[in-house]
Amino acid sequence: DAKTTQPTSMDCAEGRAANLPCNHSTISGNEYVYWYRQIHSQGPQYIIHGLKNNETNEMASLIITEDRKSSTLILPHATLRDTAVYYCIVRVDTGRRALTFGSGTRLQVQP
Amino acid sequence: GAVVSQHPSRVICKSGTSVKIECRSLDFQATTMFWYRQFPKKSLMLMATSNEGSKATYEQGVEKDKFLINHASLTLSTLTVTSAHPEDSSFYICSAHLGYEQFFGPGTRLTVL
Image (cartoon, rainbow over all chains, first blue to last red; front, side):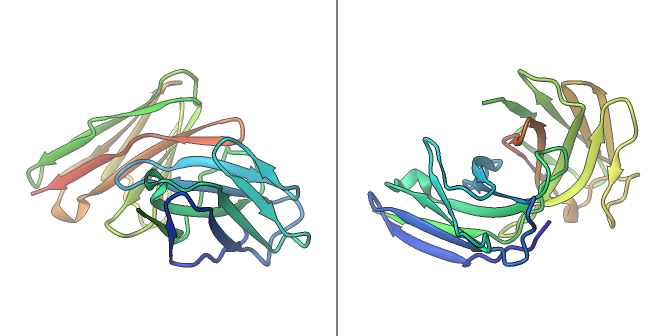
């Protein structure tokens, strides 16, 4: 799995968009970008994933650059409940192997 | 989405005792489940892969005789921490995959006194 780099922490005002960046400059052509988050003292939760096209679901949007070397997770209207550690994970296959978690980005949504 | 449960959610035990943690996939079958450990302010670290009907696969540095894993059915995997010591105090999390997504249990916080 390709290595990812994320900022250690970010703040965001409640109601504003939270944009969380991730660098994955060594990503291979068949590797997907996955995002999970972990709210304090809970198990991680899947957010979204993509290969090369931008993706959107009810939770977030994923913007992947054309060269696929970086991506941004967008929470369009952050709430206090979005305060969590967000993990960007790059991997080849769908899910049969365990996930490798980096340090992630600790997002603090401020009231 | 699919649901993975863990029991107990929290356990406190004395040093030297054994503790069993259950991980269940509630609405799907999982031939493979994963066990992670998370120390305070650290990321999740994979401990082992639990395989239904066969032996678990342990990550380097994880003692298989200390962390016993049994995957007896397609919906249940158990992790037993044998002869627990204070350094085993941690947050233990299991997961199972369904399609492209991995579903995580809520975690079990183990405190060894």
